[in-house]
Length: 152
Ligand code: CO
Image: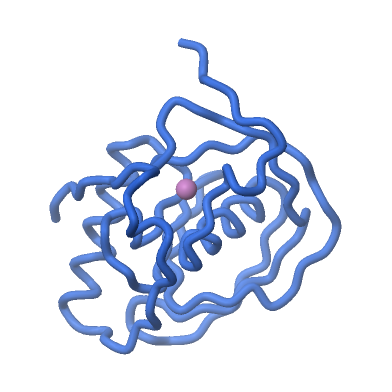
């Protein structure tokens, strides 16, 4: 496994639409392992493949003691709404208030190409929506009402 470089806002990769994954071989396994290691090191809640410069429809979410790997994900159902602060490993040192659904249902493939469905609420639902947006070149700052500098 290896730590990958997380590209920052301004990099054209973050604005492109990612491609469907068709390969479930070693390359995808290695990418997922590297993304996991990179996310842990960065102490984030989620990471999408375009953030490490790979235009594939893959994201991972690690929060509330849970870990998900989603390939070719589709948000098939949403309900309710929540407004709260969000940050992004590709927009360092900032956060902003974004409205998201309170509940989501995501359909995706696991690293072996096996389909699964996951339902999430609250922070996890927010994380799924944020990461899924990355696959279409959308960043939270596009949706945030106000983006502020983090105080340290
Ligand atoms: Co992000």
